[in-house]
Length: 405
Ligand code: ATP
Ligand code: MG
Image 1 (cartoon, rainbow, N blue to C red):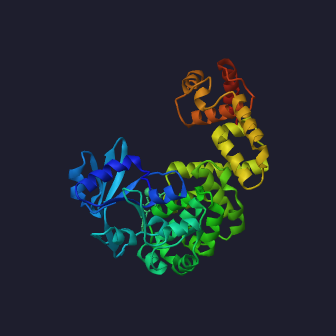
Image 2: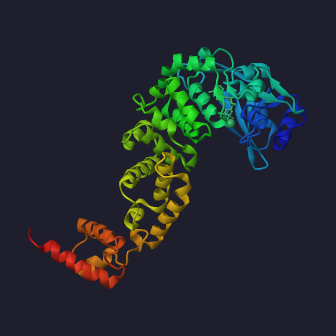
Image 3: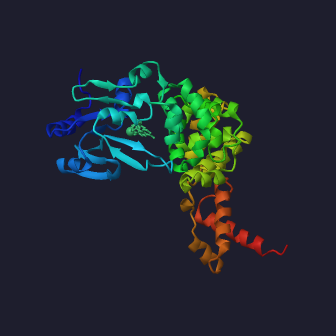
């Protein structure tokens, strides 16, 4: 036996030294046993939040009503949570009532999955009341207690279960699959922000294809906003997400697979940031473009180099470009980008001031048209990005404009 969480040892020793119990719990123990990278180390203790605040110099009361105090130690944050049980999830968001309990066992009972209900004591001994280690060996996600009850308490657990199946490449237990199927509609009670977070991680998991199958099999997918008619399972599940490099690329691939084209509507329902919405829309737009036409200097310029490369990856993920051809395809995009005389409007050799001086006109909407027309001309190589050449072109542009139709 040994205790692998060296940096957390000091915190646990302080708690134990003051007569409290303290254990590492949840994801850290699970990931240690699976031999995956450990993100954050959570500690469960018999100490009350006030005790924790008094015991350590630097603390943040991140969730003090739920018993959680963050302790800062050697540049890291550890969430120290008082043993607790939960009851009454009336708003399907937070338990109405958190009660502090005296034993670790009661605390482990409130946890969602057997693999998440593991604890380790300071000597390195595992406390496993529900067969979590066996489930790790068998690579399966099972709930603590009766699945139907645990889902009714907090329906988000269905998304979490499928998300863990994706991230860990585990299967979902049969009882859980049946319970999810019975309870799927409760997902409608869950805030979209929480669903979105799980979905992002689900799409990024190694087992995403299997996880998408589970979303369909349990009918959970049909309960999610705008996916109630998602019927293109074969397409979504056939996508090779592993090639994709960002959440935005994965969303673009997923939505294409579901044949959802109106990103702005989806983004509104899913409360996406403008930035995500814009980038997913761009990737999907330029993917449709690229399915009809090869890249050239102008399209790479207007898409942007990184979007064009994302599009190439997306085309690989759906099987329209062979994976072996991707490096060449990316090199080509890069070369086209390098060949483009400008990389943004700021690189134009003439500015709004020049056009005003040359035309003797007041600034107005005409300037926007000139600049975007000039941009097209230069990107397409029809005029040099050079002041005199632009001046000559501008005079012609003005003459054309003056001509009556
Ligand atoms: P990761 O951080 O990789 O998502 P994790 O297991 O640490 O995995 P968290 O969401 O950080 O997951 O939660 C920490 C622990 O709290 C979980 O391991 C689980 O025991 C418990 N937990 C979290 N959310 C729930 C929930 N909705 N229902 C019951 N227990 C939960
Ligand atoms: Mg965690």
